[in-house]
Image (cartoon, helix red, strand yellow):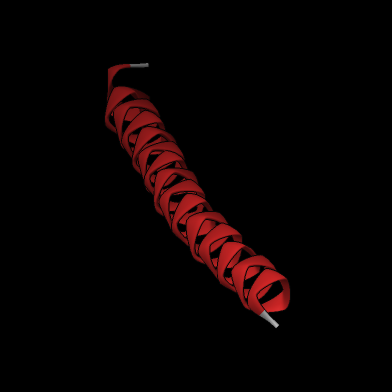
Length: 54
């Protein structure tokens, strides 16, 4: 039983490490999505302003 404890700890470490990487990946994707959304809103605002001025 004690010999298998190291494998259990290693499995949990691998699982939690993978989970942490996944959460970090989601956070980065969300930040990039918000940045892209702000850029699109700015572009739409500029197009509306150009249309009104013409």
